[in-house]
Length: 548
Image (cartoon, rainbow, N blue to C red):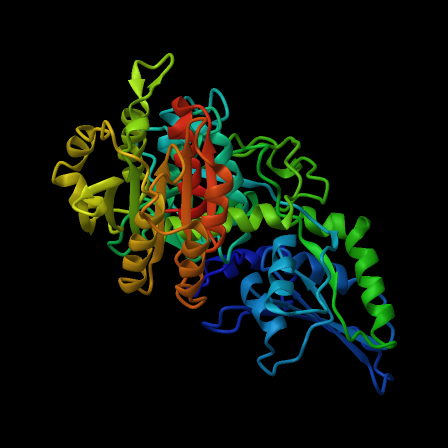
């Protein structure tokens, strides 16, 4: 959410946009202070309003405040990275609390409220905007036809030499909003959920704190310090423009997506504004939203709140001077789901997988030439690529009495996914066949496997049990459903969760049964009534729940 770095790259870019003396750079500090004092000489007790703002909009707010007739009052604008500001508002560090906060995105307001800052409003009037674009190194852009036509996100991601990077979506609004654009690029893929997970894997390999950290990794930037370079990553249009002005040796081209909301720079009035401060806050707000604000914004490389064209960059082929219709800000639940999935992608798992090999899995699936077992194993083999290579995975087949009195036997031992793939696991899974006369020994298999997962629970990993079945329990000698639910309840530990994920295959799968079993563990059940669609459902389940 911030637009500056300890080496001062973004801070230097702010200097030409404001009058000399307005900006005070505080050494190697992570933020700058822009002070605008407008008290009358005869004013004995001036009211002071403190404004915290993202670095790219702070100079514009300073210009606006400088021209106000505040009477007996003053305004101080502090520039602070939005995630740090949200944390400070939720958990005070003892420094003065601002009366106004203008972060780069409404997402920052939501984050502050989630952290406990109750006086932060849910929304605020937008004072500026900046599209979230996919920046691509100019030489890579030329390889996909630029400047003859503007590059799309899909073209950039498929370009030769495109090495992706990502500003941390957990802290940076640009990264969080970019996830919507990445998801849009794979919606027409044969297996969208799997394609999306694979795409996130590529970006997660080079996840850094902020846009400036990624810009420093550009080939030829001189700032990589021997570390891996990147050539495409999400940034704000404003940051891209500023980089191109500062460093002509590694220019960036912007790819736009209407699926990605813009940064909206909300003017948020916080709690505790005194009667003396109120007229100052009101005057600043009205000016920022009026002609004075629009004029100041135009000097900073930001767009107006409505996303109007950048007149000063009309001849720059690397950016789009025209306005365009970006997506609306998504609901908080949508953003949370995207961020949870991103977190899962970056977290190694420890997974126990139970695969039904009962006789009913021999049923042919019309139109495929394959049976349920073959389709299920194909989906399972593909799903191995969804997990991080470091994920620990064990796979077991279950039916009835597969191993003496046990209803299950091991197919793959607990080992890293990378080791499984290197040792021929895919070939082994392709040879798995259903037991001709076997029943579905679901309950005993689930309970024993869940107990194993509990004993082997590992911190720092996403611990899961996954069961894939085409029917319901058929073992009269085994545990009953009520007793199984009781035992699963006993095994729950909120501090060490192990969700059970159920995937029902075909029309005979008992969704109600799977719902009961998975709900007892905080998990979820999914159903593929058409076994031919098992891959899509399995991928969707893993990408949504397991993440990776």
